[in-house]
Every structure is written in C-alpha cells, then in structure tokens.
Image (tube, rainbow, N blue to C red; front, top):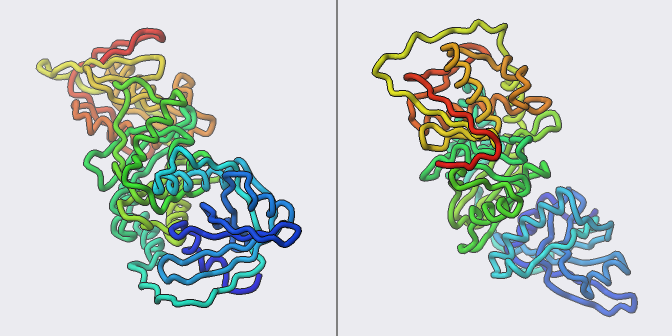
Length: 452
C-alpha cells in the first residue's frame, strides 16, 4: 500500500462527514454516490456498508475495484482510497459492529426505521493519497491515552478484592481518561445477559440492571467479543429505551417487579462498549457514554481495550481465590427485639424478595437463598467460595467464572436495599452473612404467580 498509513487517518472513518464512493462499469461509465460507513477493519483493509443492491455494488462485484473519498472532520483533509474488493460478510463481529454504528448514524439523520444493514463489503486498500485543498492544524489532544492506560494499570494494584477492583477501574476511567459516565457489567452466561456491578456519573447506581446479549452496544460487545463504538447519535434516540425494547422482544425482560432500572443517559451522543476477556472467554463489558458527539474515537477504543484486557486478567485471578476447607461459624441468637426479615424465593428465576421489595434473581438469587436457608436452619454465618462452587443445586456454569462477580453483585444489592442484611469478606475465599434478626422463609414453587 502506498501513501499514509490507514492507522494515521482513522479519524476520517468516524462517519461524521459522509464518504463518497466512485465505481465504473465494464464500459468505463462512472457512478458516484454517498456511502453510510467506511469502517476500519485492520491496517490494510476497510469495509463499506451494504444496504441496497444498487449500481455501485453491481460495479464493485463486476470490476472488483472502487475509489473512496474520506474527509477528516477535524482538519478538513481529503483522502482518496483506491480499493480492491475481497468479499462480503453478513454476520459475525465485523457485521454486528457496523450494524450498531449504523443505528447511530440512522438515528442522527432521522432514518432509524429506514436504514438496514444487509452486509459488509470488505476491501484491501491499495493506495492512499491526500487530495489538494485547504486543511486545518489538528488541535492538541486533551490527554495522552497511552499514559492514561498505563496509570490505570498501576491503580489496579491498589484493589483489595474484586468489588474494590470494579470501583478502582471506574474511578480510574474518570481521573485518567476524563470519562464522566461509565459502568462495569459482568456476564451471566446461563441467563444470556450482563449485569451492572458498578457505575459512576448517574443519578442512581443501577447495580443489578440487566442487559440481554445482543441488545444495544453493550449486549453486542459482550456477544461478539469486539469493541462497539458509536460517535454520534441524535438527541431523540434513547439507548435505554432501545435496550428495553430489544430485551422484551427476546423474552428476556421479566415482570416489572424484578427489573432494576437501567441508569444510562437519556440522550447520549457517544457510546463505547469494550469486552472484558480472559483466556478466550467473555467476563464482562466496560461501557462509557457521553452527551458530547465524537467523544470516543479509535484511539480511545485502543486505550480502553488495553484497560479491559488487564482488568480481565485480574478478574480471572480473583475468581480462582478459593478457601481452605470450611470451618462453619454459628451466630449468637438474635436479640428478642430484632425485627424478623421475610425472605421470599421464587424457584422459576431464583428471584428473591426481602419483605415486599425485590432484591436479586438468577445465580445471585440462588446463592442468597442457599445462605438464608442454612442460616435459618443452623444459625451458620460463615461460608466459602469453594463450597458454592461445589454445590450442584446452584447450577453454576462449568467454569464458574462469574461466581465472584455474583457475590459482589449480591453484596452491593444488599447494601442498596438497606434491610440490615449484609455480606462481608472475612478471609481469603471466605465471607460472612450478617443478619440482624430472624429470617422468615417462603419458597414459592414454579408456576406460582409473582407478587410484590
């Protein structure tokens, strides 16, 4: 490839300024039109969005050549890319990434119900040439992203446990990257969803909020294991509403009583979701958003991917922190004046209510029900990760990679509910259940109506 590196001009591929694609038929008759996306694939390839079988695409398939003009929205520099057609994809990570970005472009232009991605046409870049014309000097970046990633890695070392690691990561995003609204979400593979375990910048924490795999940028990033980034969205495009609608369509949104409100911005202009991976498995997602357009660019994506990779390694290490053989500890009898707490468990989804308020469901709900039953029967208060991993009744995934994250989620939901019940760490791979009084248990079988 001749000319500047494709990596150097990635800002031109943000979609802020529409790209122009030119093709010719076999007789040399030219055809010029706008294209929704020129997507960066790797240092030598780009992908063009394919939405209609039009004259341009017919020419591409016949001659296997195209020329694209892309403009840097910051400097106004115009670059001409000579392309050689390689093939098309209609599924997979690249397609899903382009599909998510197209939703942002479509909503920005008022065409949300019209644009539909049919495929991604992949081209190898033969040459890049800058077209003559006036340009502006790019402004200096407000932060050094490589330095921000390095400082974030260093701050991870201060985390004492997994819950603290989530908090440290979010605070580092704020301090080192200038991100004001962000979440960490962890995968619940059995339920095909991710759950929020930490957040910054929102009026409510949203701890326990659920997003289905494939729903919105977070769900797509988790399912496809690739970063998903949208740089500009219209002010009337509500990501939260879109996620809820997709979750309902997939039958993954339960009754209103068991939904924890999603805390996202009502009108985001920029969003990025970066998967947290370890040993080839998805553990969760780092999600950030902003009311500013173009807040997250390709360089931000690269830097946050470095952060997510390091976070994945540390989470995986924390998940293996089992304890020595159990030494059950029994609590003293509760005070006669202590108010009993009514715990209701629904077997269908392992949903748990404290008194009349929803607490949690899924794996975290099953864990809490096990602890509550054993405490009510024997007075036991101390438990270990190891025994939870070995309990077949909890139906943990084969690798049990989300056990520690479920415990963190449960711990934080109990803290937010403020019912007097708490889970606290008491040693390596061990935790303690603190209960202020008696527990009144009610196990509701499958088929019984959910009631608040």
